[in-house]
Length: 208
Image (cartoon, rainbow, N blue to C red; front, side, top):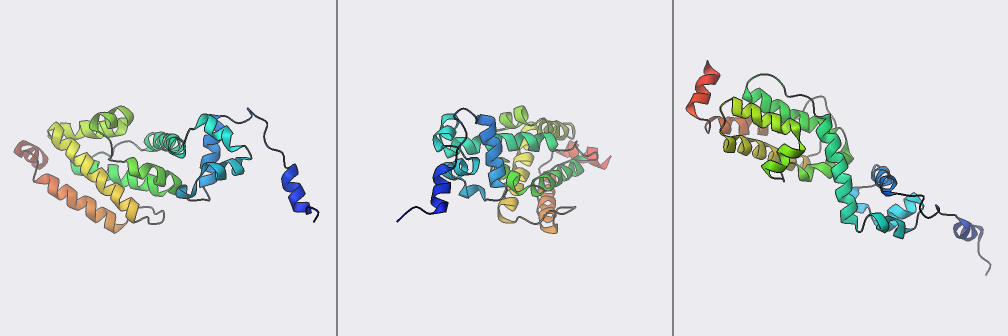
């Protein structure tokens, strides 16, 4: 049986010339692919077909899907960090609440960034956070200035980050002008718990 026209078309389809794709192009293509396809459905062969390159061209730059996802996550984290607005003014409670409200707003505005970033929020050490995320370092400094001992300041950040991460992993509300009431309720209750852990002089400063 002679081949059909479609078969001929597939056989005659030309691919990019070798060397016409690079690491940046693959990374950009992976983001474009995942805008319409869930991240967990990304595979090297599917991405190669999407980019119209041989799969070995992708493996030349990224040895595994895990390595490619790490590169995507790194780029998404950088954009997320840079896009966070300045710390809000007010007392330490307003500063903490505003910081994590802004985190929620930034991540729910971009589903793909949220999928990539949310598992990494709160999952690193204090030193890694301070080095990679100037806005978080400013938050910790602000808590120190408000009377938080260093370990308690980190506990406050890590606890709220873990809560925000868990909320976004299980409850992905549509983009909204403000975080949902359930998210705000959890943040406020954690902040209430932190009050009881503060040294007395910090309480006195808040009252003054």
